[in-house]
Image (cartoon, rainbow, N blue to C red; front, top):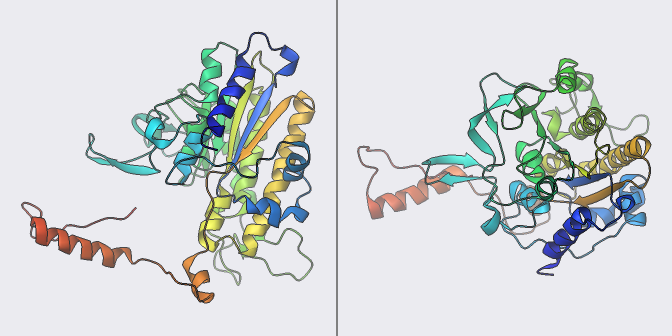
Amino acid sequence: MKYTYRIAFALILAVLTSETASAAGKPKLILAVVVDQFRYDYLTRFRADYHAGFDRLLTQGAVFTDAHHIHFPTVTAIGHATFLSGATPSISGIIGNGWYDRGANRSVTSVSDESTQLLGGVKGAIGSSPRRLLVSTVGDELKMAGKGTKVIGVSIKDRAAILPAGHMADAAYWFDSNSDHFVTSTYYMKELPEWVTTINSDRPIRKYLGVPWLPVNAKPGDRPFCSMAAGGELPYCGAIESTPFGNELLEDFAESAIQHENLGGHDGTDILALSFSANDYVGHALGPDAPEVRDISIRTDQLLGKLMDFIDVRIGPGNCLVVLTADHGVAPVPEVNAARKMPGGRLDATRYSRSIAKVLTAKFGPVPGSSRTPAVLFT
């Protein structure tokens, strides 16, 4: 398995860039989908509930039941950087979601870039870019081959939109929770396209205000998981990215991107890299065995099917290559394991930080010019 992913990556490029391949044999569009925190067993555990996108891929596509990327740690940025580059952290330069940059003497994220500004969000906010990514992606290679390709990345998270799309992408869009807008950065353009500005002006998040998250096959009288109305009888869902509604925003935005950017309508093979982020937020909060995880998995199947149908109508059946993966899985949350009488628990970051700092101070002395014990931060 060690080299399987790299070989597949090379074969995709060979097919797409070959001068001898017939034009009819090339897809007009690659839909590269990452479902953030989607364990492989979700495909089998909930198989009977899939009747749309996952069902279509499982019955009509090639399914790899034992495919792994040889990287660690398995976090969002690393998984998304590996997906369309084939490069592991020691090669790609993306070693985590964030890290301490010794040269800059500060903590950075995988895509933070102080030379850029955010477009569409809070005015003057720092933007993001793929500059820390040290390798090329499939999209970059197609761009350099001069095939007339357009590449766009879309996600809730900036790193999930930016890293699969690569350095030469035409755009990467993510959802900014501070403004409730889809945003990008000046790395890609000087101002937002009119179609994105229109979406933001319409405030799509508003239609979910006060809406309950009901089970997908709810019957009259069934209790919702939570509600987008704060202060009511039901638990508050919180931010929209912690609900399936966050994925609905992404799918709607992806359809608009395909339409307004004419994806699938260029001389070369276009790429839409789409990462469904809401699954990750739900899974981290509740663990893999919660009924909410099953529910959002079924809803993701439906959204993917909706998007694939939209693409078929727009560019014709058989003209889109869909690639589906996940960046990482998830383990049960400590409280669930404790209820199962399994060992483990949560670390108290404050207590451990103080203990470690005390030992470091005893060995190396206090911070120069300060009588305070140094803090040790966990991220």
